[in-house]
Amino acid sequence: MTRIPLAGTVLRGAVSTALIASLMSVSARAAPPVDVSKWSSEYVRSIAGTKDFDTAADCAKVTPLDYKGRLTFWYQGVFEGDPDLLRQYYKDFFATFRKTYPNIQLEEQALTYNDLLDKFRTALLGNAGPMVVRLQILGGVEFASKGYLQELKPEDVGYSTEDFWPGAMKSDTWKSKTYGIPTNNETMAFIWNADVFKRAGLDPEKAPATWDDVVKYSKQIHDKLGISGYGLVARKNAGNTPYRFLPQLWGYGGGVFDEATQHPTYGQIELNSAASKQALQASYDMYVRDKSVPVSALTNQQADNQPLFLAGQLGMMISHPSDYDVMQDLKKKATGSDLLKAQTAIDNMRYGLIPTGPDGKRAVVFGGSNIHILKPEYVDGGKVDQAAAKALICFWTGPEWSLKMAYAGSNPGNLNGFKTKWMKERLETTKFLDVSTSMLPYGVPFPAIPETPEIMNIVVPDMLQNALTGTMTVNQAAEDAAKKVKSIMTGGSL
Image (tube, rainbow, N blue to C red):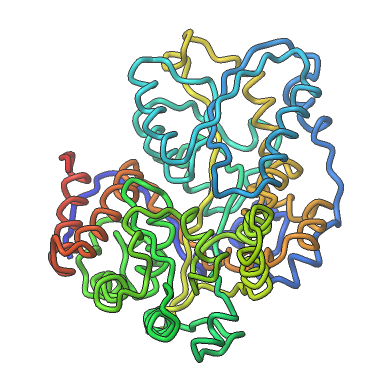
């Protein structure tokens, strides 16, 4: 393990119990709209549909509905692995916003997850950014720390800080100041094919309890059926990789830093700890020793696992509840025997909690996105229309649209979204949603430090690649990754 100095680092909250305690602690100041101490599938169902909201009326208090202005906006849009339902909600959002604010000229641009950060960085260097940007949860602190973003908190657009998960608000906080508002939050679940399990001699209705079990099950599925057991993802510079490896890393008791502890300080690098190496070894065992995962895992994203699962060629994977809808969309394109295979996979699709580590520790990435306003000097044209920006942000982060824009695969950033009629509707129509929602208290936010995007999207995938390709041993790959993190944190480069 490597200890590094982090001058001025603010303590950040982290894991399941910390997340719960964090939300409960604010009740002394203001009551959150939900009671996280009761959080369960049953509780979420009990509050869904219990309160009505009027987005236009709420946002009119922030920016008058007849306001005339102009706004440029970049955001992570839908991608090939998203269901058609989500595409429709994006269209509905912009149509509704334009109808509600007909005099605001909105110029929006959708970018893919993997392209957004790089294009945004390039635009900022040329003072050519948008007025408003919606970034993945690990991006905000990087840009806030470099002075690109304006201070922005929920109260600025008519909501309360207590209306949002504390873990999500931490991702918008830099040196005790807030620079953004969560739009959605997500925790994934473990997915398996019950038919594959049965044919491989496994209990078809029982997910692997531990990560060690995942390794064993993956091998058993491969050895008996000749198909891939687990959908390992190890692509470089892709968000899919850390979102699926970090739960494994934390489960074994490892981490990049101490982010999976109750009171992290980020002062010690843990990627080269014995526990972290054990997690990396598990991936090595599946890919190299057992050859029980797709050989294309080195270049795969989750979108590449979806058709394999639908074809009955993959037994297990980690993903969102939206994958069930994705499977339904993919099935529409199948014909003949492929159609039968697709229906069999859908009928046998099961969701469960993320496996634990050897010591019973369960963790999942607390993900999502945040929305930000740029400082005028970094915007193309040198001006920011504050009223137009706040109108859009109010619209997106309110109970209605933070729920609808996360309808198929995530959860509303605004906790009031859980009380809407749309939450009740999606619980009835989106199969397995309650499982991934139940994972929220186990969520671990990515470290709220500027270096997180580079570490998660570059260093972690590089570590996996080095080990899985045999370029380095597991031990060497972990040590190399720890050295790279140390270099990044002390002002160096990779």
